[in-house]
Length: 161
Image 1 (tube, rainbow, N blue to C red):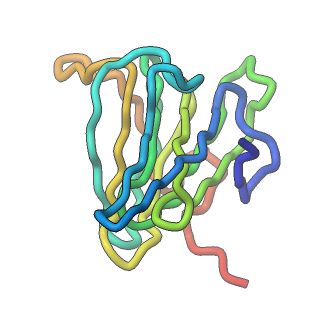
Image 2 (image 1 turned 30 degrees about the vertical axis):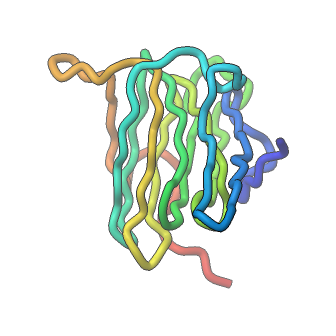
């Protein structure tokens, strides 16, 4: 699938996007998110849901050991990725995705890629993340920077015009 990326035309090395198919009928709808036969799947660690209120930014972090597979179940979120890997052919590339009610996609985020998201909808957004390792409470595989004012060249403010 050709990804809808507003910041850059090039996907970060190792990132992939899967268009999710919504199947509606008179009872409701069904949407498959991740299957073991998808190219995005490598192994199962755990599934969790995180939410954000309108305008809230949850960023930046990356993992050394796990890959993430992220989609939005409710509302809209701007999910942003940044490649700071020294040897990567896409070092310095930023990918920005608008995901949720109006764009059902799954984003595969490989280890070592900085990422975060912002709730773009007027109601709370709900994100599901399917990761390849269980969360380790004693030694979390999570490395953080502040959402604003770090060395990551990204501005979370709305871009009007």
